[in-house]
Image 1 (spheres, rainbow, N blue to C red):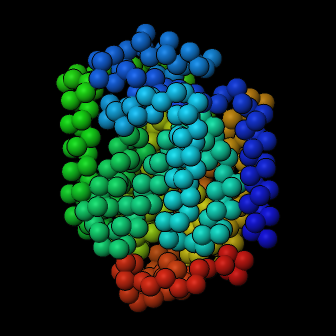
Image 2: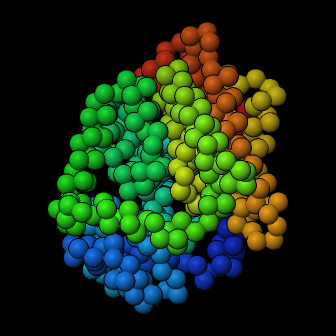
Length: 389
């Protein structure tokens, strides 16, 4: 059954991908071009990177990563474009497989099915986006934390610095959990990335990046973002509402990270980070994958559990994301925002409201409540079959 569901999801997403093949490779082209320019002092020069991108694609976008990312991409840029693109696609598929293997809160088979149905994952692979790597490094860091390798977990988290707007809650996560060695590892990894960036692009690269980020084509469609900014973009005073609701999200995530096991904290950190990001597009909603799995093993009573499961199944299909992307009607866009961002907000709220109050915590492998609150002490049991929930 799982194989058939996964295959169906792959077919649906491949059909959608080929129907929109004119947008393929947009982000890969900017990374490939950035790898050629890094170290020249012209990494954030629009007049330099734009012609390189247009050599292989009809659309060019400003490069919005730190120089260390472009430096890491330099080996790809030294390859012929078709070889580099094929290898980068393999890296993305491998990172998705790594997430399926590493993420600890659900059956790997059902996690793989969710990935097969994920339109954000398909868009990431088609565009060549790096959000997949963000998800992978969070999963790797979480697994290292659970195994007691806190410093190296922090180093893994620091790899998310390429998209810092999505990683705003990672420090909240490690501090709330009291993982000070992880915080030290994150600081060490971030320092290395910063030093490499200044070494290859000079001391003024942050200012040049900020100047480039002010271009209209850097942030072209705020109303299509699956975050608080997109959800509130149709209201007057959206910025004030976004800040106020964002502070509530931060407080809720802090509470959850203090009172729940590491995997639950990691799940809401990803969902909350997407909500707070202020700059994100449908492919970044890939970070909601763990949140879609949580209702199938969280020890919540009915009707919350059944309601959230149905909502999660709906979000796992392409429907809500297609609503956000559509140009048919603004009502479809609004409904898509309510479905995606609303789900993340409700999931966080329910996790706060239904947190264990009797000193018991969820065993991440069996779905049962246990007295030991230390997730890293749990031993893997038979994976939870979602159909038996």
